[in-house]
Image 1: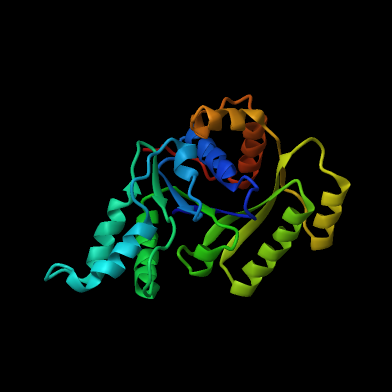
Image 2 (image 1 turned 90 degrees about the vertical axis):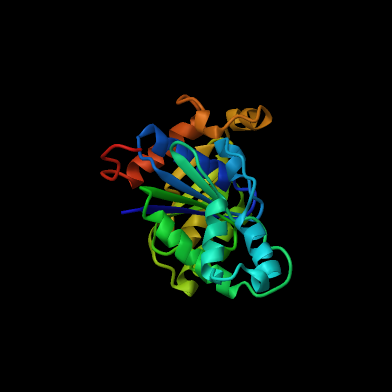
Length: 259
């Protein structure tokens, strides 16, 4: 059974870095195969994982709206989309990546989005873990692009605005009646201890931080050197914090060999 881990939080909170470190943890614990889904329009997950993205779902959908009236005879629109979606999957030894990208061009995306949901659902069963890096608005979750989120990681940076966004996301999850089994709060990029104002903001929401990830200069260094975050050393403060969170969340779920 596939375990789905989804990220949420306002822009600039480091969701992509955290998603990469979660994938690093899974790789270290032989939890492959892993399907990574970059559902942020500002797609960066591929870079963080060291994977090259040549085609996005957004470009496939734009192409579909341009050519749907001239699909080859004998091929249904659904079959055409599934073929193109498969072509947008970046494959590697242990991690495969789907990049949603931006929707481009005019036209209705209702039908292709329904086909995309079915495509990801069918694809996901071939993986032990699905890790989704979402944009702040949870747009892809609200469209039910993927169902049954096991672990929703709600990320805030060390700011009052970030904490307020946590409240908005918690409200949105309830409003959309999303099937989320567990929610965890992460304060990311913390300069040291958590400021009392941040703690007070969390208390007002009736939640607490499940993990505090410190500011880690190694992440910025790896970005400048264009090195995958999955190659960060075990000594990295951010790695240690994320590893600690995942050990709590995935206790008992990492037995067995990867591919």
